[in-house]
Amino acid sequence: MANGLDDVVAAETVLSHVDGEAGRLIVRGYDLEALAGHVTYEQALALLWSGIVEDGIVEHAGGDLAGARVEAFGRFVPLLQAAPKLTPIETMRFLLSAVSDADELARPVAMVGAIAVAAALAIRHADHKAAIAPDPSLPHAADVLRMVRGRAGDDAEVGALDTYLVAVIDHGLNASTFAARVVASTAAGLPSSIVAALSALKGPLHGGAPGPVLDMLDAIGSEERAEAWLEAALDRGERLMGFGHRVYRVRDPRADVLKGALGLLKGRDNRIALAEAVEQKALAILARRKAKRRLDVNVEFYTALLLEALGIPRAGFTLLFAAGRAGGWIAHVREQEKTGRILRPQSRYIGPMPMAAA
Ligand code: ACO
Image 1 (tube, rainbow, N blue to C red):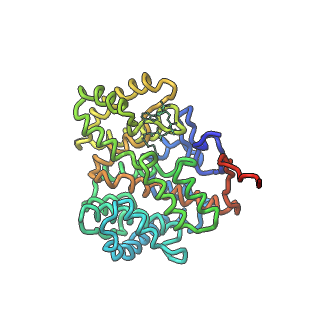
Image 2 (cartoon, rainbow, N blue to C red):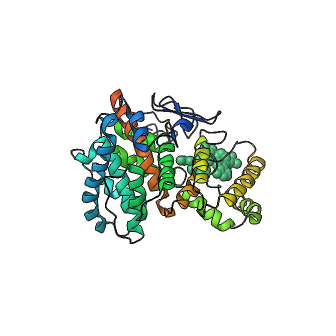
Image 3 (spheres, protein in one colour):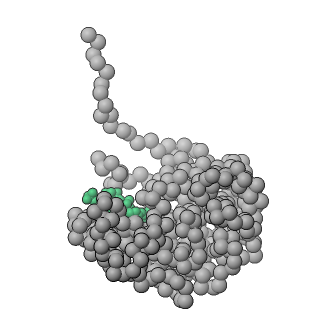
């Protein structure tokens, strides 16, 4: 048995399919490239949730979502003073933990709004900046960008964030989605399933990599230093952040979608030349040093560059990932709940047996 459950199929889903050999991601019958950059987050949500999640999302996603942001802001802001020493993602987890099953915010659309507001509040709180109230007249991505940065984005910036949120909306049975489904299978309800998912996303091996990608680019500094720095990091036994994936054996298709969105943000300091140089060097070094395992760029590498170019603080990257993945988590929760069966695998006991009586 692989100790990472690599080959275990733990759920059937109509939501998304990750083809790791072909480098293809299908979301509800569409290739990711046909969605990200072409539809808004609200439209992607309507597609992903159609027939799975209640709430009339198809007709009313925009309005409900905006109202939910306003409701969540009013509820969460007073709680912030009780979270002074928490990291941003811990603050987000804390805020979402306050949502009861009986709460209006526990409805699916409301949860998407609540997750986005919790992310924005937690990011600003960590920087000791005042909370920015939502503007319900704005589309979701535009308002999220405004609430995080404190200033509105132009069309290119809002389009880039929309592309990002859609690009990460769902991705098969990744660790956080699996965690959500396990908790959902016990009939624990949506808020608890979401808090479980967020907790899984917190780790650097899943959602926490994009901040460290920028740390790596900072440390490398210039193209000439890339090779020596990368070799030294591997000599120290470190992993290169933004590379490798449990399922993809080729390039993560989301990486190119995000790189394309980054290219549209002309005139920003997007460090794309340095990133491309580091990518090329890293791929060559990994191919030589880790010849047994095909390692390529994953979603986090260009996520880091894109969110940095949008002026999002790096401590907030994972939180925005959660804001995008929220749509997928919620759909998986409802899909799992419909099976009506608890997820309960077996373990194989390898410990000592009781001594036979003398
Ligand atoms: N840098 C260097 N070596 C790596 C990397 C990497 N980024 N990723 C895997 N390897 C190596 C391992 O050291 C191991 O080598 P070894 O056999 O010589 O010991 C081999 O590849 C296989 O590693 P596993 O641990 O089996 O790979 P796994 O499928 O469990 O890991 C993971 C996938 C966690 C994403 C890994 O590639 C990694 O740690 N990457 C860096 C962190 C990162 O970018 N995370 C974001 C992932 S995308 C997301 O979750 C949204």
